[in-house]
Amino acid sequence: MHIHILGICGTFMGGLAALAREAGHRVTGCDAGVYPPMSDQLRALGIDLIEGFSADQMALAPDLYVVGNVVSRARLADGSPKFPLMEAILEAGAPYTSGPQWLAEHVLQGRHVLAVAGTHGKTTTTSMLAWVLEANGLKPGFLVGGVPMNFGVSARLGGAAAVRSAQVKEEPAQRAGDTELSAQPLRHPLFVIEADEYDTAFFDKRSKFVHYRPRTAILNNLEFDHADIFDNLAAIERQFHHLVRTVPGSGRLVVNGLEESLDRVLHMGHWSEVRSFGAAVSDFSAVGEPHAFDVLELGRKVARVEWSLTGEHNQLNALAAIAAAQHVGVLPADAARALGSFQNVRRRMEVRGTVPRDGGSVTVYDDFAHHPTAIRTTLDGLRRRLGASGGRILAVFEPRSNTMKLGTMKAQLPWSLEPADLAFCHSGGLDWDAREALAPMGARASVAPTIDELVQQVVAAAKAGDHIVCMSNGGFGGVHSRLLTALGPTAQ
Image (tube, rainbow, N blue to C red; front, top):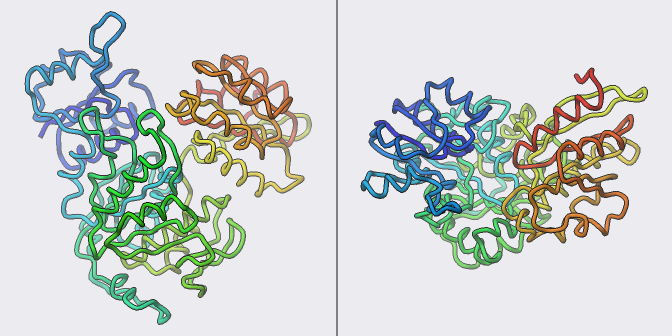
């Protein structure tokens, strides 16, 4: 069919476009501010992109319009529609659907879906799980909200080669019933998907993940987020329980045993096997530092992970991926071996360059962290890796997500930035006072209304041995390259 995608440059919709193209459909799309890298990736796939949401795109006459959740019925100041194409689709009675629903009906049908949900770590854990399955010969399809460096693409269909009937060779010390559930022969190709709790579309306010119908579901963590669509944590917990309701009896829920919010979700009812991770009394736990640790199942060592990643959050992500992979036949030792070659995801503590300075060097990182907890865990992980004498951490961040722009979590910012030696906040576009919010940090915090001023502040403060971590869920005005240029002409 010919599908035309509204909002095609988002990470989810762009991945969906790639899957549709791989499946043989003709794909076109539109977005506001069509820009690299997604625009380049899509054009390389032969997908025609149109700037904006003009109604004249109706002339394309596709078989179906697929609508991203960036689209709404909003009006501009003059009363005209912000998305004229959507208005024209509705007036014409043309067929349209949401991205998650199209994916469910045209890609996920007939597959064993492994969904990764949680406030934090979805992209990283989805990438880990996909790589574990790939390294063990299962050729999964996947859709990730980022670019896993092991694959170089954010989405692929996978293949029928993922179907196998080999039984799992379980070790004897298992709880009653676990062996049968873990050792099921695979009858369907595998598909790993990042399962977002954000709403589906302006006409479908359910969370995206309700559409995916997983047989294996990771519930990685759960905090309050998305204040633009959820009133409180209880509302998000209810959506997570809707996901739990879709998992069949032969499925597996992999649940973070450290999260009281997830306990409340399970207490609403569950109908599948539950395997916990993280706590000392969980089914899967870790002993050792995050970069090198033993994996225990029911208190017995079953694997060891040695890799380049840092931070307790990544240790927990690894346990979740190992427990999920076991459900489709991958032994924990084999999963841990695969994680040893996991290369992480772009924009997850990705080193953007190093610059000589004052007889030493300064390193600049790019990270996607934007929620206070994610900021804290990112900085904690780096501090733990550097040690007490490993150089200063300069945190450079912008409160860009809808939740952060609303100021809902501004009081948590001093706590989230505590592991940093200095913090620099871009305050442009905020309706709340960033200086006031960061006042508890005293002279350790600086605020700048523009990227230019922010770069000047950081460059003036930087010295040899510093680690500059730029954190945002957007492009951040190219601050990474601008810092590298301003710090010195020989960035590597």
